[in-house]
Image (cartoon, rainbow, N blue to C red; front, side):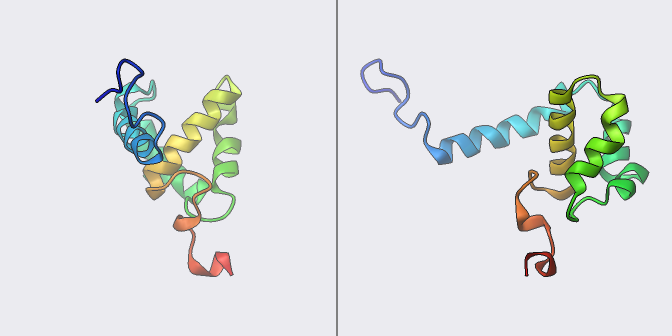
Length: 104
């Protein structure tokens, strides 16, 4: 839906952006260069146990463990963000994944 050639009416609306973000995340596994086995290792396997997803500091632990394997900082942050989402169901910084005791 457009408003006389000025682009979509809902463009930039927060709910539309959330839908677009969800669609982007759904496509992430197909667009990553990491094999599925490595994604699973770091999100749910022995690598995940080292990172301790869902506890305070998990994102920084991910960065520390994967730093030597990822050549560029911006790629490292994106990878850890996607692994965090895969492991916890939430993006980094979204405190809903921490237990109630960590927020008191």
